[in-house]
Length: 92
Image 1: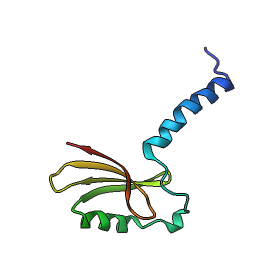
Image 2: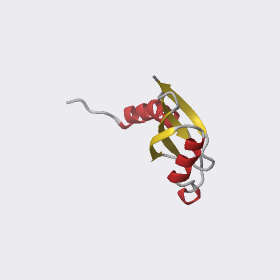
Image 3: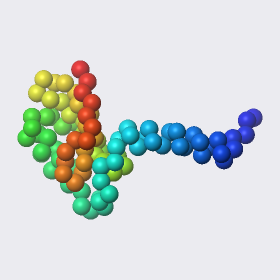
Image 4: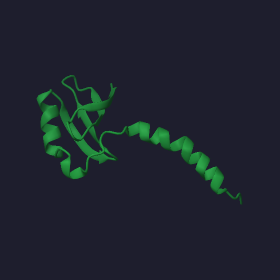
């Protein structure tokens, strides 16, 4: 059995945590009480022509999973204060 030291765990955290934060991004420092409601974010994206499949809170952001008018899948990290994407990934 291998024993992992505190130093090894600290080094691993320094390497992994920045990547984890980058995956979702930092969207806001505002409390959740000030966030847009999920239904309002959905309505905003539907006005832009998306068919929203799912929204979930992840860290300080919303993650929005939607289809565009060509049925192309989009995964977006969204600022919950203004509903604007901070990161987007489109899949065929």
